[in-house]
Amino acid sequence: PRTAAAASASVANTSAADGSNIASESAAGSAGAGVQLRRGQHIPLNGQGLERVENEHFVGHLVMMHRPPEDGMPCPHSSYFATRTRRWELRMQGKFRRKPNGKLYVGVVLQDFDYSEPLSWFSTMLGGLSLAPLERLLGAELHFTFGDRCQAALREDAELAHIVGELAVFDQLIVTPAGDEPPPLCGDFTGLGITRAGAADAAAWTTATRTLAASIDCEQTYTFCFWSASRFIDLLGDRLVNLIPLMPAVSMTHNILGPWPPHFVLYCLQDEEEEREVARQDDGAAAGNEQESTAGGTHSEPRPEGSAQKHVECRKSYYVDLMVCSDRTAKFAALCDRYELLDARLHDSAE
Image 1 (cartoon, rainbow, N blue to C red):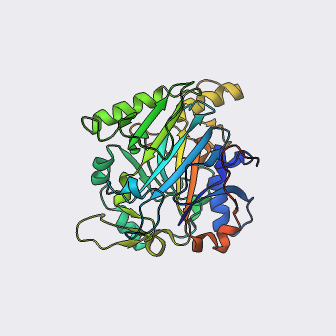
Image 2: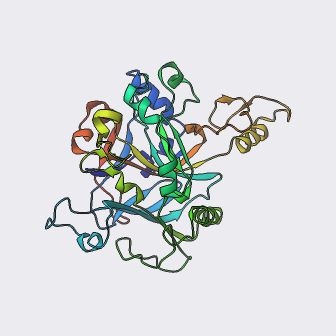
Image 3: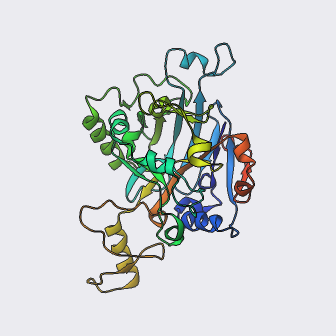
């Protein structure tokens, strides 16, 4: 497999960075309509942390490290995995170009999925499984949905399939003050920053990560590490494993995703009430108006009290968007009609 930095990693493609048209692209793609190509850079597996990710919201580098599938196989990170059980680890490091104006979420979104078809029986069964064990493992509350389907997927406020949570989903976070040198991206992070393992319990980890999120600025350098889900996600085998005891491995391609690759993302979700207030100010509407135009040009009714806020694309700003695919998936014709995948950008090399 390879990890490709998708459209929001390109400064040139602001439509993907702000998330305003991803939902409509997914719906249009399902219906066979033409869509504008999104640009992205190829990020090789087991790189050296030199590959650059950049958009209007975030700039930095990342590395996707994976343990050798067999003992003795060459791998630049063999010594690192020799003392750890994780299959893989994703590291991202950089600076925010814009301070988040809402809550940050990290996880997986199916941006390219075919939403014209109803849920399969297997997806329905999988959706019935409790998230509690995974939430206990991550120490984070998760937001999960298979997304709007069929005619509902064509609405401007359609919600894409995703499973995301707050920054507590990450396993380690390091903040480097402005002017100081951040740790080498492929180096030893032992004892640096805050870690899930170092927190007293899940509640303490959630509190620590929320405190960090609230203090994010555009001067310091932030390093994010994620590996806890590697016990469930076998990238090389294209499988979900160890979901529940005695349950066999599940093929992600054949049973869940089809040929469409998942996107590992970090995005900011603007609060609905905040968005309505901005719309009121922009439009000069009366304060008591019950239905306001959102910043993305759609309309929404006030959410019933106690209901979960929908993660609608027009309310998102994507800071990082990584499309994970195999060489076979990358050659899928429908995917090639949506993306222009370029070679990786190293350091500050010219575009």
